[in-house]
Length: 178
Image (cartoon, rainbow, N blue to C red; front, side, top):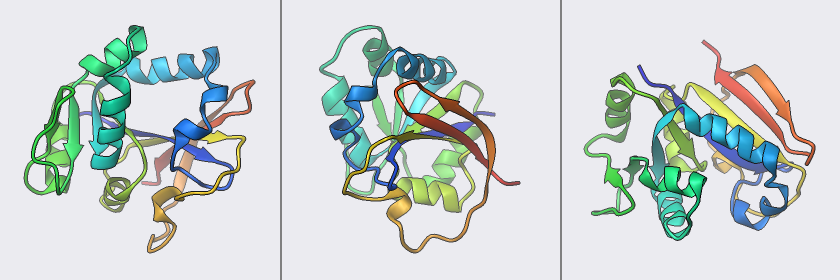
């Protein structure tokens, strides 16, 4: 059975939108090493529509070892509005929760999910995420907060580990309480 791992960049004040505006100065060897370790155990990406569209535009234009891996990897996209995809992606059909449950039941490597929007909230509410990797950047910014900030029930998480980078990033690895 596969695991779903969510990897999300977040500022000190909980902002998740536009990480491309604040994360760049912190991308160093430690950052790439941690990302590479996550990718090494990943077979496919699970993405919501907005993250898919942004990633497809940005990553399809890049090359290099990480970009090549990212671009070749299968992607599963949850969307109520898209009718077709590119970038080695497939739309999830039917009920999104059931489609993701079926993906989790398959043999293979992990499903890595980036971005935190309505799909993340759906996954949280249906207890489908096995691990969260919240990358807390030493930055304050204005924007959308994690999980939308409203209408969220309380969900307790167990700390599985913490990784601190010299750049000031702290990655909290967490799992939903059983």
